[in-house]
Image (cartoon, rainbow, N blue to C red; front, side, top):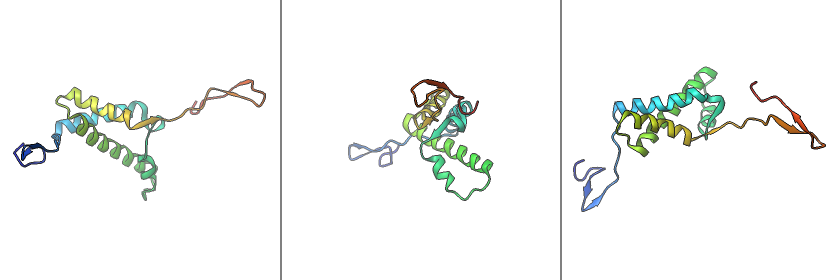
Length: 130
């Protein structure tokens, strides 16, 4: 980058290095985000605050709310994944998308298959969603 730019050198000091956002990087990082989301989905993954923020938007249709959540999730994944890793190949960009998804989401807590009654004896219960 040219001297004096955001990622250049000015007065002998290195300035903030901004990764290059190319169409290829964005597309492959988005593929990584979508791949992980497709495998686990909204039922198993919870992005830490994204779902709650989108729930406050004036979107009535659950399908549209889901679409907005996925698009925001992928957009954030591309921004963070590329900014943190600055991938230089398609494999690195896909890995950045998958890694971002894994770092900034948590698995939804599934109830235990075994609970205890008041006497402390094990009682089998059904898992949620089965």
